[in-house]
Image (cartoon, rainbow, N blue to C red; front, side):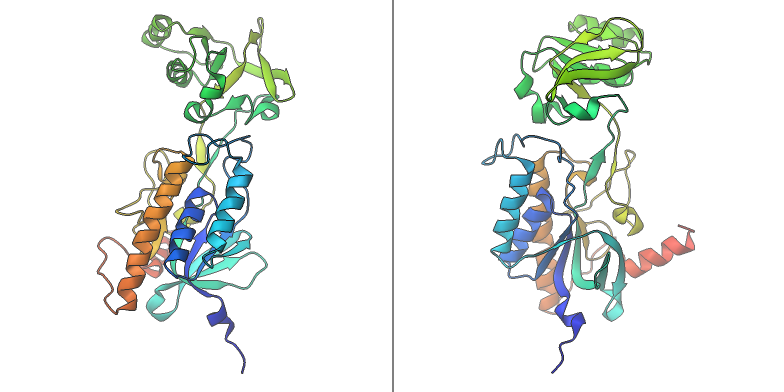
Length: 331
């Protein structure tokens, strides 16, 4: 007797994104005896980092090792993995309650619930040489990498005011901090704050970082002498790594990140979001915690539905209605 492929490829939960948030949620759901699949393209936000820091029990683990550990632990509970890129999601099943997930070059799969753990991507400053040092002596998060450069000559790189704010934060880790304003003006008050806290300012636009073997040594400007340093921290924009949250009806805040409701809900019925994309504190351990919270909420909904007692979720529209509204609004 032939097996219906739609049944073979039907899951309780599809998790899109295999970083700390997605893997944490998958493991919790696997322990709840749910059929779970994690779809991941393997390009995490912290791809360049030598180590992950501040993760209790796994401090100084490399990002690649952390993913391997997470996959192995989740797989022990029956979680399945698929390496690929999600091309689209649409409503399917009875009354459009399920999600059909299309992966490039593969047969679609369906799931009763959907967790988006797609995260964000940092926009690196367009400065010659920066990528040679990124993740080793050039960083975006003082909490993640400041301790490794404690007491050293630090540079806070940003456009004007952003550089001052970052420099003030870096004073926690070192008394030797220079704010590189990258050609942007700052107010008299901002300059006074810098001076009061022993922060030097360099106003010229940064054109190049120089050093060797992953260790930055100098910041070069469009004119004037270079600045000697041991580490650079930069302040720049970040963008959603995937367009899926927006295309599926998630709401953005003023920073372009996703608003979540309750226990990592999105406002779309059956769909949840966890990780850096929701604008909470962007630590790997926080992303993992959000994944666990989302998993509990997802399992609770599945339990209610399995008993024939689905909850009336306030402010949660079916995906089909969200998609129809997007079309009507000209999205």
